[in-house]
Image (cartoon, rainbow, N blue to C red; front, side):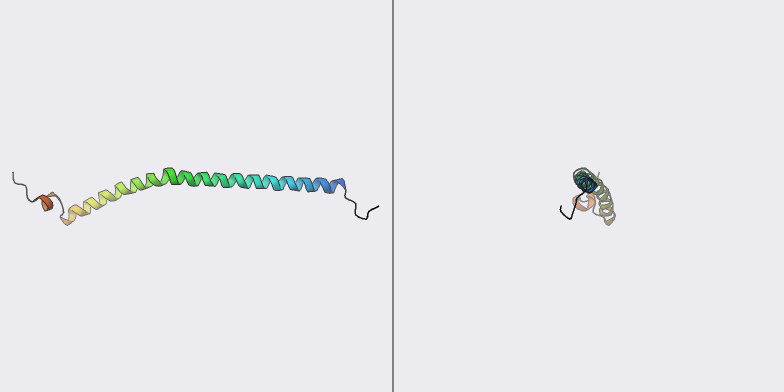
Length: 82
């Protein structure tokens, strides 16, 4: 008889350990997929929206500075006489 005997309990604990490792790996893959989807959402939807908002906001500020410096219609087209 061999000196090392493997019991049924040892086999079942090894199988359950394998199952939990497999479940952990699958959960990790799902988590990484979810993060990738969130990154794509941010890149496709949120960044263009924020860029559009920021561009419009900056254009109003830039135009106000432009007029404050005196670069309005009168600067480019001269004085309009009625």
